[in-house]
Length: 178
Image (cartoon, rainbow, N blue to C red; front, side):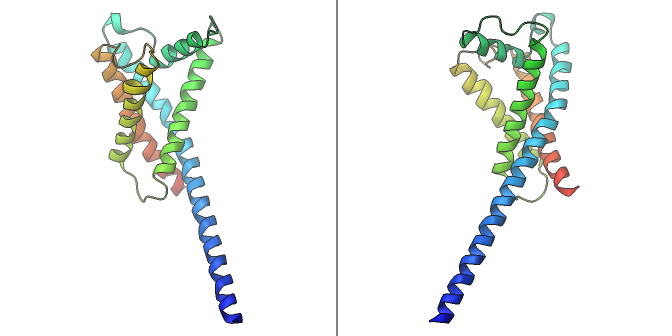
């Protein structure tokens, strides 16, 4: 009887150890994803700005992060909250924070999967773009939705998100190897 109790206690300890390691692994993966999402937002933003400047003059208006923040402020009945000089830091802080949040979610989804995958990162970037610009923003009746923007601006945002996903996936593993 004592031997069965010892075996049972050992099994419980092994299960606890396994659960703690799994919890640490997902926490680490989420943290790496959050940092990678934040880091990848910088080149994504540079790509957005570069592509915006290549669009016809009539399509070179505010980038979607600014449009989204203005729509949010308006829908919350905050009036002209986003006024210079506070406007730009608020917009870009929110943009980078959202990139980090999407990276954190990616980290949870890929938890422990081996190796880099540019295609997996790009697929996730596409998913983030589609979920936001084809579903969430139109549902919220926001200006930046895919249904309200010309094809050139939609392509600008899609390419930016594909690059973000690829860079984010690469960075999440690069950090793990340092």
